[in-house]
Structures are given as C-alpha cells and as structure tokens.
Image 1 (spheres, helix red, strand yellow):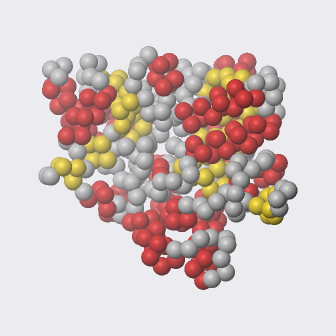
Image 2 (tube, helix red, strand yellow):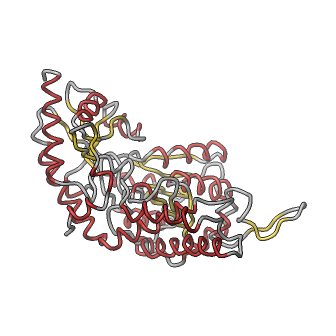
Image 3 (tube, rainbow, N blue to C red):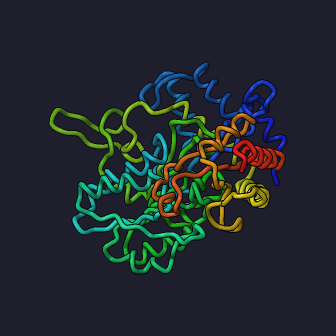
Length: 408
C-alpha cells in the first residue's frame, strides 16, 4: 500500500491553506489532479536550461529538448503498454483525441446509415464530436443505456451493436457514477461485429493499470492533467495500421515530409498528427508524472483508492438525506457524486468551500447522464493517492453542518 503522508509531502499545494487558518482539503481530482514536485521541477528546469523547439534544430538546446520530449513519449508508451511509440500521439487533452478520431477517421470512413455507438453515461467529449461528425456524414449515433444502479444495461448490447456499427466509443470509468465498465468485454463485442472500439480512459489511466494490448482497443484517449501531469497535454493511442490509413487532422509544420506549391506529403507516425510547435514542457511534465505513478505502482494506486472510496461511501451514507449516484464500492473508482434532499449542489459546494473543502458541483460535463438519472446536477467528491480518511471525515462533518445551516 501507499505511504500517503510521504505522498502528500510531494504535493506543495496540499500544504496551503484555503483561507487563513483553514487547511485545504482537495477532493476534486476527477476534474484535475494536483501536481507533485518532480513534475513542477522538470518543467521549470526545461524553461530555465533547455528551452528550444523540438525536431527542427541541430543545436544542443534543440537536441536536448527533443530527447526529453521524445523520451517522455517512450515512457508513456510503456506505461499503457502500447506496442510502438508511433502509436502514441500527443494531443492537448482527451477531448482533442476524440475530435481527432471523429474528424480524421470519421470523415474518411463513415457513410449515411452507418452507426456510432456510445453509452448514456459518457462525458460530453465522447458525445459531441460524434454528433457533429454524424451530421456531416449521415451516420447515426446510438446510445447504450445504463441501469438504475449506474451500470451499463448489457442486455441491450446485442440489439444496439450490429453490423451497421462502425465504432463503439465508451468510457472505461464514469466520471460521475464512478462505474468501472467491463472494457475488454465491450471491445470484444465491438470487434465481433466488425466495429472499431475507442476507450475514454481519462478516469482510468490515472487510477489503475491500463494495458492497451491486453484490451485490444483500436483507440484510447486520456488527459495528462488528471494524472499528476500538466494541463494542455494528453494522449491519443491508436493502432498503427489504422493511424497510417487516416488523413491528417491538422496541417502545418512538423507533420509534413515534403511541401510544394502543388501539394504535400505527410510525415511518418506519430508526427503526421502533431502539426505545429507542440506543448514541449507539458509533454516532458507528463513523462515525469508517468515516472511518479510508475514508482508508486498502479496496482498499489488502485488498491489504495478502493480502500479510501469504500471508507468514503460508508461515511457519506450516514448523512441524512444524502443519495449517492452509481454502483456499490466494488464496481466503482474513486468518485462519489451525490445529492442531498433540500440542498442545491452549488450551495453544498459553496458551504464546503468555507471549510476549505474543494469538491465539484454541476453536471460534470455529463448532462444526459444527469437527465436520465432524474436530477439536474450533483455534488462530486473525488479521491486520489493523497486523500486521507481524516479528509473524508471533514467532508462528512461539513455536509452535516451544511444541513444545519439550511435547517434540514
């Protein structure tokens, strides 16, 4: 298991006070994780000592920057067990990864009447791009529903996943319910009907071991800022033969082999999909975040989060009027979205903030999920490697205090 106090010492912001005399309790890692000192320092070191553009220079700074940037890609490749670093594309975030696949693969392959299957628990990043590309191509977006307990209604999968389905894109872990979906089973079902499978791993890669070869997914996207890395960087994984066949997403420098006034040819993977000057410091920072998590051990990370989530769900269940969205602890990741009868989630979040507790309130970029669950919004506490049982206790105390403020 993890040495949580040692881990907390690695995160400078956790030593801050939310307000004078009020310690910060950060329970919003599902929105964006905090950054450990090694990530902060490596980005600072790049700007102080190695700042230069990558791939284009033959001077020492450019070569050093390129080695650090591409070295990070190699470590990220190993972290998700991709077969080849050419399959690991730097993007700004998971959202850009979905858009890249939608615009590049979707425009080239979707025809009127083709179907894209998603689930009803998806983040907007895995809904909106498919709606846009379906409107442009004549394809149809279909939805696999979820059950009242927040798990997918797998009994409906055979009638929704058919020979018309060209892509099944789904989340590995719901950012609201916390549901850990049966990823391998869903991918195998997609392949059985000849469809490609894309996985939203934004809430999986930071929290549990992910092996893209074992899953056999065709595409997978995740964001760096949710896994101890910086904002503005993420990864799209794609099988090499599929990426090779796809046209570029954007045109410009660094993604070309040759340019004439009459036409252009493209660079090899992964650079074909990485036009322009990239987020160099961010890529290097993400590589260091991967090192940090690798040193902890993703099996250990997942085990600890299960422990703290179990504790949190039991503690929250003692708050009168509180209803937790999603499945039991055994089927979920480190997320607890909830409502309290008589309290708006924004009021909950505001009152908790006065006690130094940072949570998320709203629809969490999952409006369809909330609508189908019969609520407009929810409050969400999310847990990570630095969350303690004492912080969970403070959350519960503050929620009970909030109920008293509103005389509930």
